[in-house]
Length: 377
Image (cartoon, rainbow, N blue to C red; front, side, top):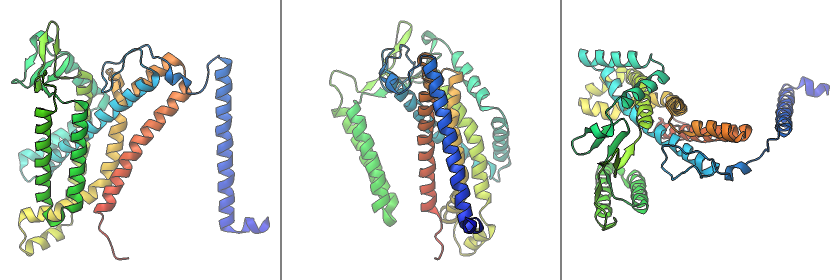
C-alpha cells in the first residue's frame, strides 16, 4: 500500500477510480430516489408512454401529425423542426456574416460604417427580443384577403408566406437529393485540377434531372407548378411558411450573422501581411492573392470560432417556444405537462441535442483537419 501511495502514477489512478466510483454511486442514488418518488405518486416509469396518443396537435411539421399521433411521432416532428430551422438559420447566418465581415474589412468608409452599425446593433440586442420583434412584424401584416402579392411568386400575410412550389412527389425529391449528394462527392473525389469544370457538369446534370422530374415525374392531372390561391379566408395550394418559423429564422440569421461577421473580420485580419506583400512581390494579382493565400488562411483561422458559434445558434432554436414554434424543446415541454414522464422526456431532450451538437462539432472538426496545413513529422 505504501508503494502505491508513493508511486505518482498509481496514486493518480487510485484517486480517479475513487472519484469515478463516488460519482456513479451518487448518480445511482439520485436515480433510485427519483424512481421511488415517482412510484409513490403513482407515475409509471419507462418509455411505454411513447406509443400513447398525445391528444394535442402542432401547427407546423414536415411529417404528418395529428392530435391522435403517438408521442414518438410528435417528438420526431419536433426534432425535425429543430433541425430544419437550425440548418436554415446556420446557412443564412453564414451568408449574412460573410457579407458583414467583408464590409467590416472594406476600405470603403460607407461599407465599413454600415457593417459596424449592423454588428453593434444586432449583437447587443438579446436574441429573444429579436425573435419577438420579428414575430410581431409578421402578425401585423395584412389578412389573407389583403395579402401582399410578391409579383406572382407568392403572397405575404399574417398567416405566413405562401409560395409556389413544383409538383414533385416524395420519390422525386428523394432522387434529386441523392443525385445532388452524389454530384458533390464525385466532384470532390474526381475533380482534380478541373474541379470547376466538374462542378459545372454536376450542376447542369442536377438542373436537367430536376427539369425531367418536373415534366415527366408529376401527376398528369396536376399542374407543373402549384400556386397558392385565395379561397375564402385562406390560401390553398403551394407551400406555406408559418410566421413562427420565419420570425425565428430571421432572428437567428441576423443575430448569428452579427457574430459571424466579426469572426470573418478577425479571420481576414489574422492573415500575416508579410505573406500578402510576398505574393504581390511575386506578381500575383489581387484575385490570385485572395483565392490562393488570403481566403484559405482566413478560413483556417475562422473554423474553431465558427464551430462554437454554430453549436450555440443551434441551441438557440429553443427560444422558438416564446412565439409558439413547435421545435423539439417545445414538444418535449408540452409532453412533460401532458404525460408527467419528466425524467424520460428530459433524457430524450438531452440525447437529441447531444446528437445534433456532436454532429455539428464532428463535421466542423473534420473540415478543419482537411484544411489544416500539414507540418513535417
